[in-house]
Image (tube, helix red, strand yellow):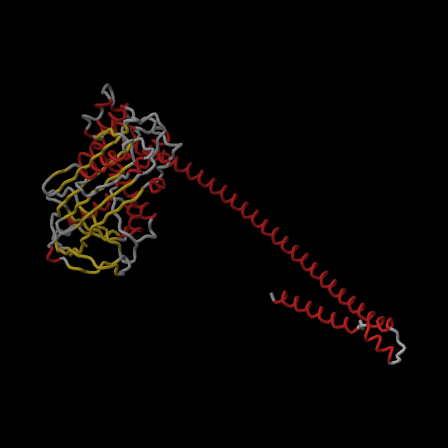
Length: 503
């Protein structure tokens, strides 16, 4: 801007000087006549020639200066253009190098993913072989017995099948919780979930899956690749989890809401109804409002009003069917807390920093309590009911140890080790009392599990092109969403919890 003003000012000054000198060098006619009268012998022509010649020289010098400046300006502009062109070429070169680097990184990432997928497939196959190696083959026990009655009178086999499938369910629960915690380490929030609700719902898909999809389900859920074993083991677990006493109540339900306009195969409906006690409910998906009300009403009844809604009308778009798994739990403490001893106290995180004030319950009594060095955590067991069938296991990390680290180690140490240590401590310190401080709380969680399960190895079932659920319907279907809702309330009397999983 300053240079622009300087050029304009310089030109104005040059124009002013030129005009002034020209006026002096061009005498008027009156001036010439006056000179003649006074006897001056210089002619008018002579008076004009001298100043005119001087003016031309000055103008020529000015033009030369301007031409020189114009030349310099053009040269400067040309150098500027050359510099800009060089910068553009350098930028293009950098962009080309970046593109090449991205291509190399993508290629390397693709190679790593292919290698990881190959290793994962090998691991899945090894896991399936390990599960099957712990079970007798069909040829060893079949003889002339029909497969439907294969497990009816084989008590030892029943126990082994139940152990293998229970262990698979436990591994799935720990891995699911571990992956969920790792995916949300940056977020500081409370969480409640029911791994069994998720596990039991995906088990149903074993009856409708094939190929690689089936292998992934068997591997992630820890199932043997024998459908008779799966059916029998699942029935055993579900029967054990249906209890109704004055102090303890557990109920689990499954339902399939099929679209009457796009029906599923009758064999699939019959199978999940017979072996998995699944309620098969045909509905009209074109009437979205009634269908959503029917499904949400089923969930409300199954959870005794604890969870009132799992679907909205938009969730039915392009859906072929909806599968629901719900669980309800109500347990009274074997040793209830005295509400008069509940006080408002601070709640601390693993680093000893106060997170807020809570209603802290308190009691002193004989409870199984131990510490496991491998977990870096203290463990307390609070039993429900009078028969000691179910308990709440509480893990308290040592100071400075994140909860995520304890969960990760728990997947290695295994729950059976925890139970054994609690049993040993209970036997050795039967008369010792423990002071228990437990917050009174209520937590509700609602989240999707697609990405979590994909990280665990359940991938093809979420792919529109790779999912093989060909035994369910003749349409190409896949799991578009897997949603999970859960709630828990812990107070002086006991615990009430419910969860529902839908796909």
